[in-house]
Image 1: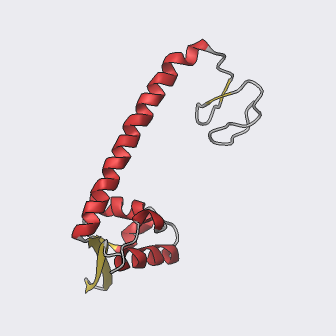
Image 2 (image 1 turned 60 degrees about the vertical axis):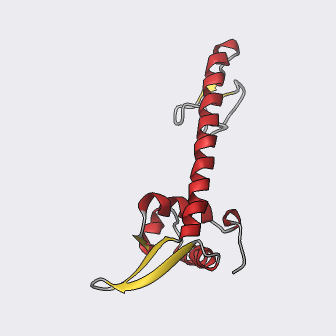
Length: 133
């Protein structure tokens, strides 16, 4: 079996983290994180071929495809979760540092939709794209 970097698989990390959080699920539950069933099927096939997830079909009143992590997939998902936690901690610390220096410079315009601060001359929010008044 050829090793594939799950980060190279489209939506691979989102699928692995979703399965880590939920355990064995119906394939259709993954449509919560992906809108296209075709894209989902391709991504799942790539993850199955990489040995990171497994899938089985059961009849539960109707045909249902159950999907879960393999032991290797669980290890990969655990590492992805750790990386996400590290990044979240970094971003929180960075946000706190920015909040402490925010009063030191002109705040500019605040977006009424997302509350992001924008330069005084901005016509559109740099965060969400909403037109600034």
